[in-house]
Image 1 (spheres, rainbow, N blue to C red):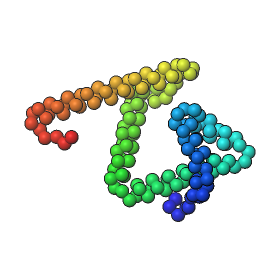
Image 2: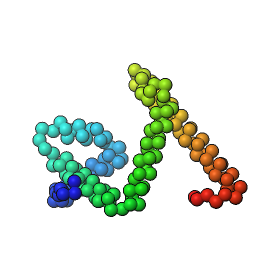
Image 3: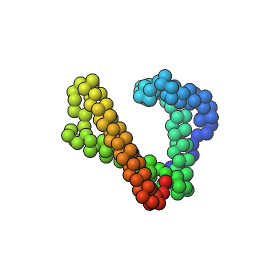
Image 4: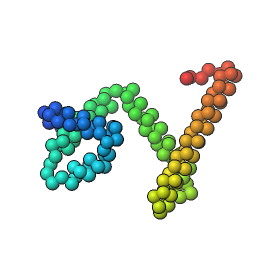
Length: 148
């Protein structure tokens, strides 16, 4: 990954188009699946798709270099991964009855099941956060020195 070189000339030439694609995605004018589907269906290599691949290669290289050189950044990434894994574990535990799968046959029922799981997950997180806040407040009132 670090030995490869990206094509800066292609990125520079296609930069206005890359910005337009990014803006379309950000503001909901197009979906990622639509763009990827259109590029996949194209019979010849699309220059914009090639520029996007080069941009991705460049961003991955920059991220890898930063990750390898900065221990604080590595800890930050690890914390974010742990939060995500914890959230997935909570959702899996709450959704245990169907072994963590959406089993309803109709889209409306699947959507309802997913919304219920989201609502339950948010309720558990909110309650836990409030409970821990009160517990920390009580410990501080008792004179314990707790780090923020």
